[in-house]
Image (tube, rainbow, N blue to C red; front, side, top):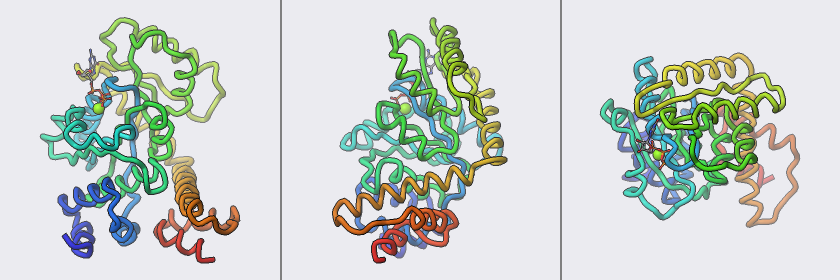
Length: 308
Ligand SMILES: Nc1nc2c(ncn2[C@@H]2O[C@H](COP(=O)(O)OP(=O)(O)OP(=O)(O)O)[C@@H](O)[C@H]2O)c(=O)[nH]1
Ligand SMILES: [Mg+2]
């Protein structure tokens, strides 16, 4: 498919074109920028829900149920599973990790990708993939990432609502790790509620939360048993609550901040190779706003800043 054809098919919300674009991003194809430049003004319209947590915590099972829930509530939904850790594992291995049968049967677009984060870090690359998915006209994008190390933090830079899934019985977990989770989670899920120790884990998280600094939004802690579809209703309700909370107060501010973070990352990649110029904070701020308003795409923005 030629680049021009791809762009026009994307504009028609063609599913195969979207799949193709995601492959281009995954393969770091040189045409990615051209495509993204041409669709940027049409993106940014879905609500992004990030789900992270340790391997095997039940993330995919939960995502599958959430997608069904979204569908029942008349939200058009897309799913992205990003594997930040194994760029070379390829589709087959990732495909095995997906446990999203019912979403698939319901015709929801699901894509599993490996990412090295070349387009200015993992967060930026993931966001471009989401932007690609958004060409389908999704209201909601569900993004699953394995929460091992870097992935944990990066998902926050992408998602409007971040859900952290924990499970009991992973041994005596390091307190610091749990503290880190409390930092990033808008909603905390204790999954595998059918396993011993889930009550204790939930109580522990609650106690740690109460010790932390007081914020405008206090992350709810929800116990789920995803394999029995227990607790997912409440999780969905809390996502909607958080979305409402953000819409009322700070969603645009937050998204703008994330675009600024992306822009700085991408710029520093460019500058790293070119060792150029000094850029004022104002310049970044202005450009971030223009990107956010869809007046300009991130690639042209960087070209402009570097030109100056
Ligand atoms: N007992 C129990 N098992 C569960 C529950 N939720 C998920 N599982 C099982 O846990 C295993 C892993 O589930 P996944 O949904 O693939 O977990 P994941 O976090 O997506 O895993 P990765 O993507 O590989 O990190 C599967 O065998 C699930 O059936 C639960 O609530 N209780
Ligand atoms: Mg999974």
